[in-house]
Length: 270
Image 1: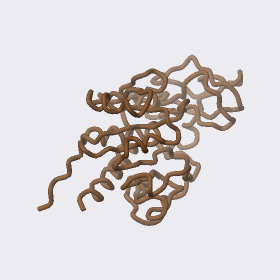
Image 2: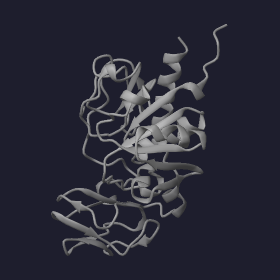
Image 3: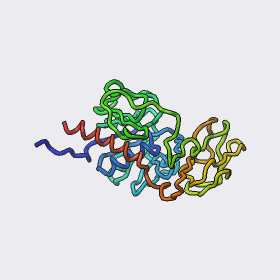
Image 4: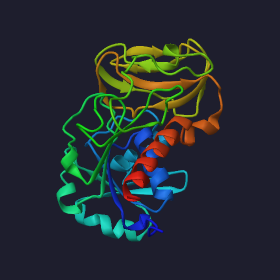
């Protein structure tokens, strides 16, 4: 019989701290892996209540009982790990990998293209979504497109291409997403969890109003004061109207997290 895998000795560097990346981090943290999240200086997460990248702004954040703490440099990971938390580091190029020497690298940026992740970044490199070829750019790819293959671990080939159409929620696709009507600064008096009706003004971008196109609950909004480009996703309305969903990790994020977990266990059981 092979020796069991000791997850607490496996270091995982996750590039990106949005809601899908955070779902992966949360699931791996629950399995005792040592997680480090690297982020950009100004994250633009929509589902902020379930995104560990919010620690970049607030110094600390919590998602479903798991705490993430902002650190100034890579040396700070050990103190945060000792506290049972997830360290978050502003490090867009993931240069911390040189010091941390992760056993696993997860590209969860979701840029739909490879921004520089390579097979050589770690003994095991996993990417989420399109833009990567398993066996060439990375070892494994996890499917992120909603549907029958969501969360599936790919050992060859690429994930399904981006359709540009949000996944349906109660049959609603494009209309549930709030987008910037122009370039400018996003401002809003609304908050995640607020109920809205079709036609309600949710906020403005450079004084141009942004209206709700459906009834529902504001499941996500980017932070007020951020600069955006026309068409940028700034919010998400959930037509189910359940406020509880605003603060809990989505089934999509958990499925993707399961795919990453499978990839790690497949690799380290060898």
